Image 1 (cartoon, rainbow, N blue to C red):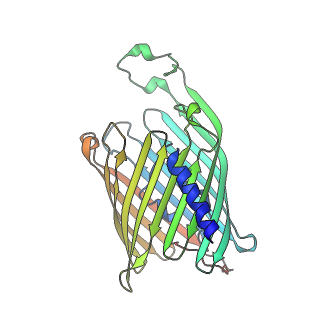
Image 2 (tube, helix red, strand yellow):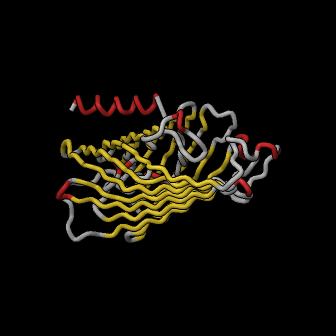
Image 3 (cartoon, rainbow, N blue to C red):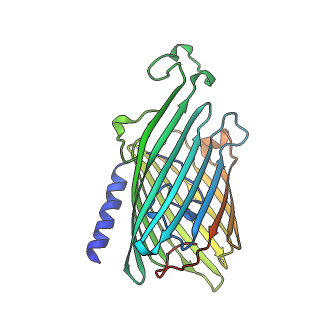
Length: 310
C-alpha cells in the first residue's frame, strides 16, 4: 500500500513540474475520460455524456466547444472501454477536432480503494483559414507565422492517466498530447498538458452532500487552477460555484462560474453560467455550458463498486 501511494505521488509531482492548456469545463467531473483516460468505465452502466460550451456570448467569432464521451465497464476483464470526441472552435476559422478510443484497467486495491490506469489514442485534426482573419498589419500574410493559404493537418494523439478512488476521495493525474513536446508546439499542434485533481465527498446530512475539489493544469509557463464546491440534494439536484484564476497570465481572465443540475430517472441535465472577472469582463462576461447525459442500464451488475460516480 505504501509503495502504491508513493507511486501515485511521483506521477503527481511530475505532472506539476511540466506541461498544454486545453479547455477547462465546469461540469467535467461527471465524465472525465476526455481529460483522463483512467476515468473510463467509472460507472456500472453504459454512460453517454454530451457537453456544449459557448464562450463570450455576444462577441463576434467567439469560441465554441463540445465534448462527447461514451464509456462502458466489463467486469470479466476488469476494464473500461470508451470513445471521446471533442471539438474546439476558437473563432475566425481556427478549429480543432480530436477523436480517441480510451481504455482503462481497474484494480481493487482493497474493499474501499480502486486504482485505474488508462490510455487513449486517436487523431487530432486542425483547420485554419487565413482569409477570414483581419490583421492590423497586412504584411503578415504569407509569413511562416501566418500562412496565406487554407491549411489542414492530421496528427496522431495519445493520453495517459491514473485515478485513485475511495467512496469519499478521488485523485487523478494525466498527461495529454503525450506524443508532443514544447519544441513541436504550433497553432495546429498542442504541447503536452499535465493535469491533476483531487476531490472529496462528505455528507452534511442524510440528504445533502458536499463535494469540494481542486484542479490544476500546467504546460511550460502556462498555469490554470480551479477551485469548486458542489452540493448535492438526494443525489437528484445539485448546484455549485467554481473560481478559476489564470495564473502567470499577462491578461487577467479570472472566472467565476455558477452551476445548477438535475437528475431525472437516468438522465442528467446541467447548466453553468460563467462570469468574467478582471480584464476579461471588459470583453464579455457571459459564457454558458450545457450538459446532458444518459446511463443505459445493463442486465448484469458488476461485482465491484465504481466509486465517485455522483
